[in-house]
Image 1 (spheres, rainbow, N blue to C red):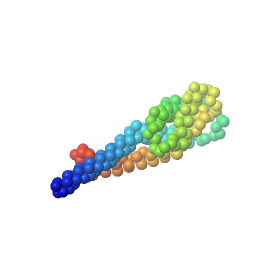
Image 2 (image 1 turned 135 degrees about the horizontal axis):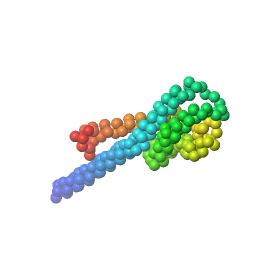
Image 3 (image 1 turned 90 degrees about the vertical axis):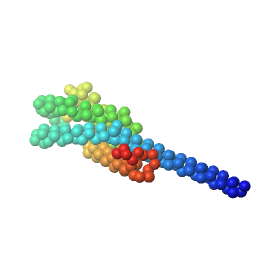
Image 4 (image 1 turned 180 degrees about the vertical axis):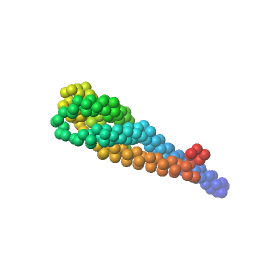
Length: 194
C-alpha cells in the first residue's frame, strides 16, 4: 500500500515537473519568437526604409553640393541666388529633397511605434520638423526669401548616424536571435528551415 502511494506521488510529481518545465520552455520560446518578430518588423517597416531613403538623400545632397555649390562658392544667405541657380535649386528641392524628406516623415509618422527605446529621439523629431517646413517653402517659394531654404534646418549627419546605428544594432540583434533559434536544443524551432 505504501509502495503504491509512493509510486502514485512520484508519478504525480514527475507529471507536474514535466508540465512546469514544458510551460517554462514554451514561455521562453514565445518570448523569443515575439522578439524576433519585433526586431524583424523594426527592420522591415521602419529602419530599413529609413536607411535607404536617408542614404539616397545624403548621396543626392553630396552630389548637388559638389557640383553646384562648391564650384560657385557660398555667399551670405541674404544674397538672392542668380536666376539659373534658383531654378536649379527649386527643381532639386521639388523633385529630390522635399519628396524624400516627406517619405521619411510619413514612414516615421506611420511606424513610430517601432522606434527603438521608450521615447522618440530628438534627432528624429528635428528631422520631421525640417521635413514639415518643406510644405511652407514650396507653397510660398517666391515669398520664401533669398535663401529659398526651409525654416528649420536639416539635423545633418546626426540623423544619418542615428539611422545607420539603429539599423546596424537591430540587424546584429536579429542575427543573434536567429542564430540562437537555430541552435540545437532550442525547443519549438524547426531545424530544417534556414
